[in-house]
Image (cartoon, rainbow, N blue to C red):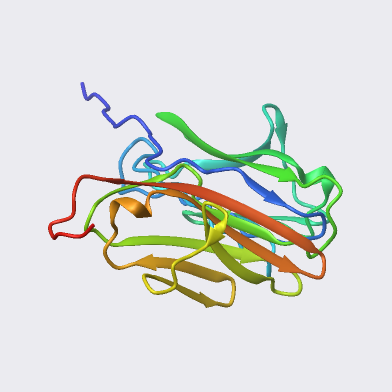
Length: 234
């Protein structure tokens, strides 16, 4: 008599909420992968946001047998294709697209993978910005804070979206950044602030602001610098 074994499913990195303007387009990727085992497993969720494109959930599933996939909005509503929504399944790859995001698209979206040995899911919240216009700037910046040691390099990446593409400005504690020590590189939607060797004085709140003809959006994150530099004068 044989017995079946497997590994319980898990998500290493959960999806995070994203806020969009009505009419703005974005991309969400839900990537679920794994080797051939009985449970859907080794699952990872990633969030990537763009202004050019559609809202796209992509799932790549491992398991034996290959899990079935369904897309849910909220707790009970199963999403079916039609109109602005397209759903496609090919082998281990499953994809859902939502075109031209509107107020009615706000809510929690879940990707659920199931086989006879178990079930796994991940989800992301799409929030509508009240009263904002199409093209209004959006910013994706890790807002949970950064902790580094003195002497280490600091890198703060952000994605800034909008139509037209917003102008970007960085600040520290709502004041201009130290351009002699802090480098900002902006290319297209991507903007990153660099500090080669952080010192204790670099701790604080960092703001990034995107501005275009539709309005202004600001996001911020906190940086904490711990310990002492391995050199004097910091």
